[in-house]
Image (cartoon, rainbow, N blue to C red; front, side, top):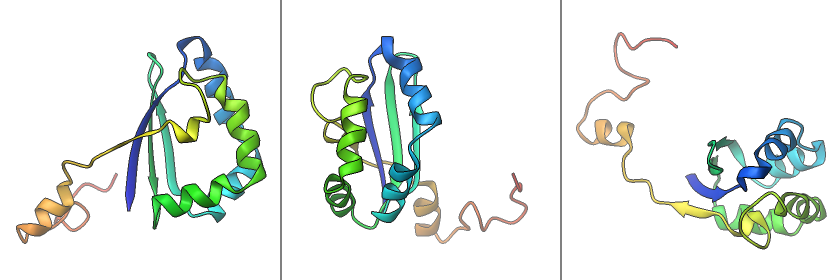
Length: 123
């Protein structure tokens, strides 16, 4: 399942947030991978809007597994000062509902999906 969420980084902390995510601790990267976070991407706007997309078998289980790890507590503490909200950033994420999926609608109509379409450009 794919999850999309939003959060808000303080605008005066954008550079620090970008720098932290350019060099995420190896043990944090391994923890995310090992607790079921796959295809995880973050997007940051100039206004501090943070949008994340992640693929998980179960979001609740992935969150619970991460919350149990000391490296996550250390990372959340380091990141907390960069966000507008109080508390751990991973607890303040607002999940968004998927309202459109091109491939699902194509498949429901019996049409080729984006990776099945003849002559589809190979980006």
